[in-house]
Image (tube, helix red, strand yellow):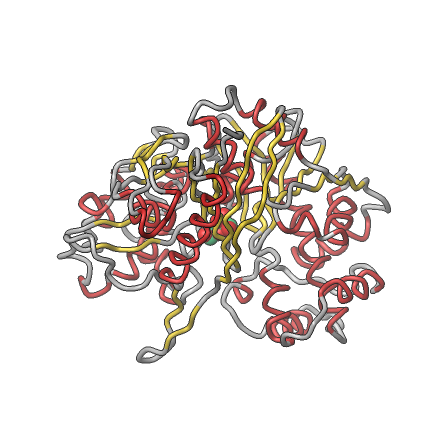
Length: 493
Ligand code: LFR
């Protein structure tokens, strides 16, 4: 028999992938066996559209990917699923899916945080869950969804996206902890559901949270074997491992760092920028800077901030139409003078889908800047602005946590964007090490391999495997800091 083959299901906001991995001689060899599109689906409703995820199409893509992954090997050693965070499906008492999961970019959460804070003030909530305030945190989505007592009678389950797919594959209901920590309903010290937050949902908002939420499991837990040979083919019988099911948690496992003094940018649709800690930081300064303490693999804390990420560029490309050649566009963007125009990518106007080039022009006009003249200049504006946001987030993460940072690791699809990596090194003033580009899948695979006993050790050991298996690219900082400081002052005053 050949080496054991594991399969990672990694669902991102713009595509889903099934990637196999096998360990040989201390190296992880990966292969993409399936890729399927994903994205927000606006559906007309009274008043305004609702944005959904097409969960059934994702489920079909997962099934087909698992069949393909298993077939040549006559089976799989294990399977793990990770995805974006916060979103969920609701099941009724017969475990039937109740409606399509709503996309976190849907407008239903407008005003929801403020309504929740009337019952549990933001500072008190942060003391418990350590979480940044994003309007789409599950706790706020549930408060919005419950309007008019709509969820009060519900007697079933609430499952986050990877746990929902895992339930369909195994019949087992769990809440994996790294992803659950993004709901706003987890006590960051106890790594358990947080009574104070559940009470608010159950009282004023009438959401029967304790009835709906399954038991929490730490990443690395074996959930159960895949059922349904008719659906998953030769993958049937393989154990499903609850990996770091939040994609960012898996991506941070795959940072090929050799020391603790690193920052990371997990760069995909979002850019998650921060450091890895042993314990949460919940100072008032941290809360004011909207830094989050998400839970990581092996008892770690992912201390980070969400930066709007390549989403802004993805939406530009969508608006410009299908014919844009990204490589050529990036080449032209590289020739545009640096920092000609910058925007605050974290401005809420960039969160919903829409005409990003127009929003960028509007932002430029409001801040007294010359708006970008064409597609290349707009692209350069987005990349300069992202690098500027990374500079701020890396520095703040280091200052607020006291963790020294000597190097910035970029993992995820953005590791392939050489211009963005170079700008990041310049903006932060530190070396950037880019890769692996499939960070979440790599972290997913290694946590599986360890759970089924194929590798041993802690995060440092897993990271050595990543380093030995990845061709990384290094970017040294060049140029003065002054233009970046000036751009920062322009945005922040
Ligand atoms: C990245 C990510 C972020 C989370 C956002 C929304 O893919 O998981 O960590 O804040 O998506 O779920």
